[in-house]
Image (tube, rainbow, N blue to C red; front, side, top):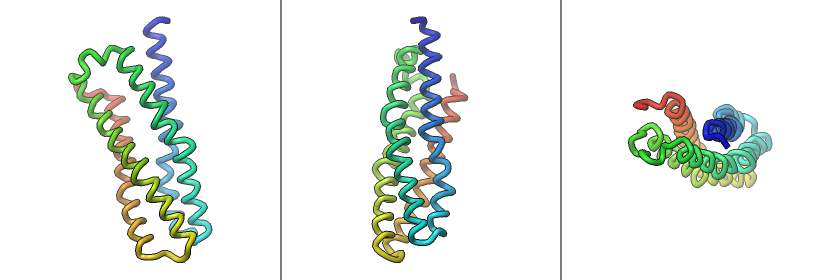
Length: 158
């Protein structure tokens, strides 16, 4: 297969994966506050929806599609040979690793714990502390994703 065609296909899959996998997470900034206002049953349903989107869509794309197509692009497009001279690329990968860790190992379990607490009764101080923590982590992840998009599109420094 022609290298140019392969790069185009990989890029289409990679960009499509970013849109499909990470696009819905931008709605979490709206859904989270709505969960707080929806009352116990409605709030739980909204939080369960957020976790379902994470587990069924975001995590598979973030853990499989994006790393595999990104790695393939690095090698096929020739960025591997002088990888560290492409600061925009390795910076984006470091940010991706931090955002992935925060989303998978902090934010999703935090939301799951909040769901369990919400199902057991009215909001407790523990629940409220978790909600505040979630309100800090969510924007970090969103900002990280936006930064990665900017780096991948503009490739500052070439």
